[in-house]
Image 1 (spheres, helix red, strand yellow):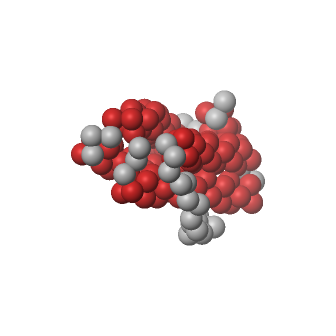
Image 2 (cartoon, protein in one colour; image 1 turned 60 degrees about the vertical axis):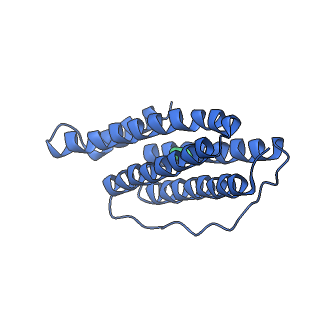
Length: 163
Ligand code: FEO
């Protein structure tokens, strides 16, 4: 059984994952508007992944007999300066999510809530993968700046990373 404090924190994480889904969907819309179809498709698929992250937490909270709560989430930004800025923001955002997951893990250990600790290990591994993925996309822009790729090619490569 979860403590009230753990239920609150897990529900806050549900809202964070939902915000992530909205943020990536807003980025997808901006990319589509700019004709960057590969990045738009990648970010839309990633938005779906974030919804799955929220649902997994939602299901866990419900399975313990606690009440999963759906909260209002703030609107994400709708305009970005460049494609590189979009992906810098995704990496910055994922780092903040990693910090939030680490905080949850700390709380679970502090409460000797080993069930939640075990459940959160999936998110720990997922955050490692997500940071790695977004760093690899940002690397493409450094290649572009050194004259190795065009923005068109980068957009196509980003699409292939979603497969
Ligand atoms: Fe749900 Fe991209 O972290």
